[in-house]
Image (tube, rainbow, N blue to C red; front, side, top):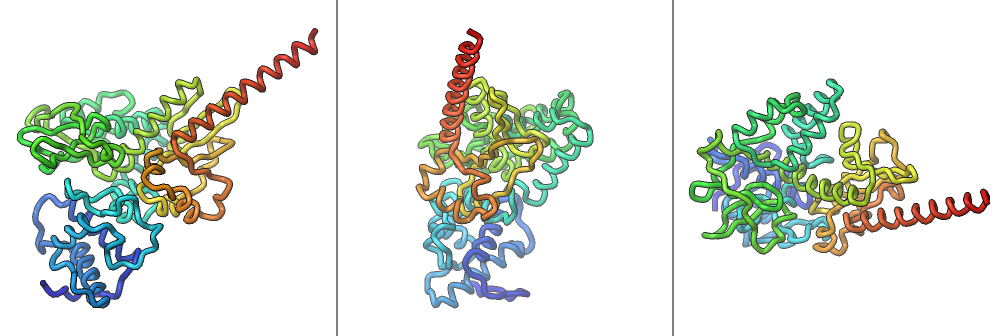
Amino acid sequence: MPKPTASAGLDFFDGEPLLRIIATALVDLSRRRTPTDPVYPDVVQRAYNHLVLLCLRRGLRDLPESVPHMVRWAAERPVHDWPLSLPADLETADGFLVDAQTWFPTQACIEWAVPVRDPAAEQFENLLMEEAIETCRAARAPESYTAFRKLLITRPVLTGTQIALLAGDIDLSLLHEVIKRSYEPASAAHLRGESYAVCARCGCLLVPIHQDEYKCELDRCRRDTRARVKERLDPGDAGGVFQLTRPLRMFITGPGLAETDLEAELVRLRLAVQMWPNFDAYDLRITFPDGQVWAIDVKDRANPALLGRSARAFRPTPHFDKAFLVVPRYRFSEREDYQRIFDSHRPDDLTGELALVSDADLLDQVRRTLRRITRNQKATTKTREASDA
């Protein structure tokens, strides 16, 4: 086993700080397309050094012998089997940092790697989304921002020709430079033979895992026993194949699909729905027949503790009467204590101000509210008719 190299500030790390260091290293490794000199960047070497140091301090004989061995640990050992001092409620449902079939970091890993409020807002991605909002705000073009968000949700994969043609779209032309920076060339890890396969559920590229099998990177799709292919794309046609950067796929496309699914259900209930009002103050604004307004923000997070810590009060404009943080139902099914853990980590000042519910529970509340409004309206009509008689 190679000796851990000396580095400045090689202090003892354990628990959550070390988990963040390791997760950040794994994400960094996954983004590298070509070898570097030195082979491993500082962020990766530092993570390995600290992990080995922790193992030695604990007197463990079983410790990673190299950086690749550390990656294998992440794919084969759930976090609770690592020598980390972590409370149980900080773990996720499956607990792995790397998917053993695709060898990509899991969503849980990416969430740990980004110690900021919005995981999609990591460095470049943060600047990109802020630039889109500021550009649209300066141009007084909220419709352009709405079109941009819908593009990231509904078309995570585009050909080079399709990206070029977006310059002529009346709503998207304002953000064409931002759009070009949102997409990156599809990687060889997604290529099988001479084509890329597109997921039928989310529209992202599938990862080939066996001779005739694929797997999707998004948690909402990975639960399917067998991924379905919508179409295949030839990398040599139409200017090449591009896909959104991975944080945008994970934290804009993923929850965005839940947002648009929810929008469709609310429209079916004949409610007025506004998406991303006031340049993304929150995700959905729904207005009931009696004028009552609900504000909804949709998140699809693997870790309820990190979601609770990141919860913030919604911006007050535009006005709303109730605020909801909505998570897809499958997260509650995967982890029965999801609600309890979120509540224990949520800031105290949000108690009673921001409710966490599943998308199914929210729709149930909407239906009950509509029935109550209908009853009240009928009662009011009868009272008026009686007084007029």
